[in-house]
View 1: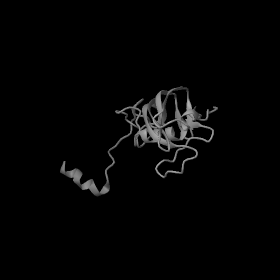
View 2 (view 1 turned 30 degrees about the vertical axis):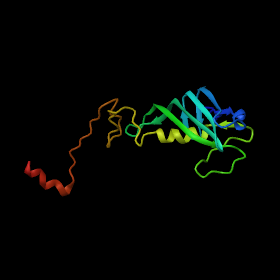
View 3 (view 1 turned 90 degrees about the vertical axis):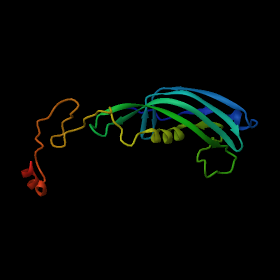
View 4 (view 1 turned 120 degrees about the vertical axis):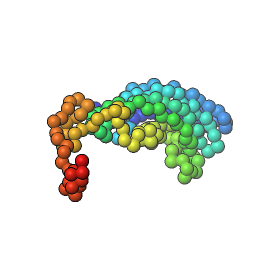
Length: 168
């Protein structure tokens, strides 16, 4: 399978020399994107770029879907996500700002891939599930309990608690 490298770039060279407050609205409508270690099915939304002191403020909302594996049943699934962007990209000739690791290229192009990758990672839940009621895998035989039942017996008791069985 050939993966398309993320090239989510926009020419913002007109804003790099514009007055403070000048803005540009970018419509994003792309197909599959591969952000190093994440796969997005698409990106849809609108981004506004505003010229601010020392850089460009990128603000917007993008919708997408991520390909993940369920932590209970280990099956792949697609998770719809919303990516909220709000970050300042420093201009090429501006001094580095520790709070902003992103910058506009010297050619005036804005590459959103690093920011999107970071925001997408934050949008992933700690334990991604294919469904809230996912039954997972049988701990003994490994069968996917969402698709079939297993015949494993679970009456094995910890020997330290065996004596408590007599009280029932």
